[in-house]
Length: 327
Image (tube, rainbow, N blue to C red):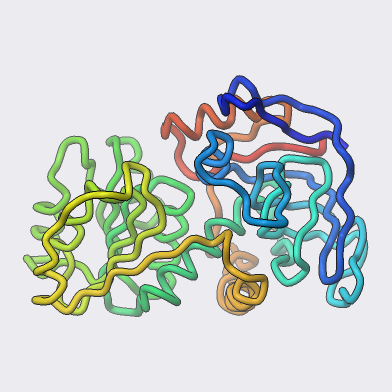
């Protein structure tokens, strides 16, 4: 099969199509013929040597795919060959065939294109697990999302609207701010032009927000604590600008704050299956009804995976970037 490999220097320019052995599904797994694969920040980190795959995972890049079931592993009964599926995978998505735990696969919602389906798993698994399970976000609360125009950010906006939550996002341009407001955000702050702490305080009459979803890291830590109201929760999902820094813990005690965070890839199959089941019950019907939707910024053929990574690293995109694997 065709797959993407990359050089030891870890540059986008080193990414190229190569021939590799087709994987075989083990017990409880599916073999998926990949039509589209989603691009995510962890792919960029893995390529550059900063996020190695967990033990037993494919070394091929790619954490989400959409396609058709090509073969069933031992014990798989909920799927059949030729089913249209999208799946969260531990690796291997940038290839013509990919193995996925059957418990991490979902049917492609009615009316959704394959490319759109490939943009669902990583963001929805991550946002649900962090905002609902860890962040305990609920109706009537306020949410601040950093990186509001990213795939994660747009998904968080949609989840917040579904839950009846007021959502504020930070973005890096006026264009992104306008897009996020049109997409459903109540407020969008251009952090390059405005102090987001001051703006959040003004927008909330000095009260602050209940939950912050942060992917920036250490430079925002003190500011995030500053905008949280009493019993607020800070949820960390990435460290795009670093994970180490000093901060004053006093606001945590004075406002009874909780700081939490998680990564998706190291979770067990059973943990991911529980998230899959929650999405199937609560989110997939909304997608099928057209009330929730991914936004695809760009689609690249598999051979241009390096170009797709350059776009991801530039942060010029809005929403998701996908690779077209099957023509």
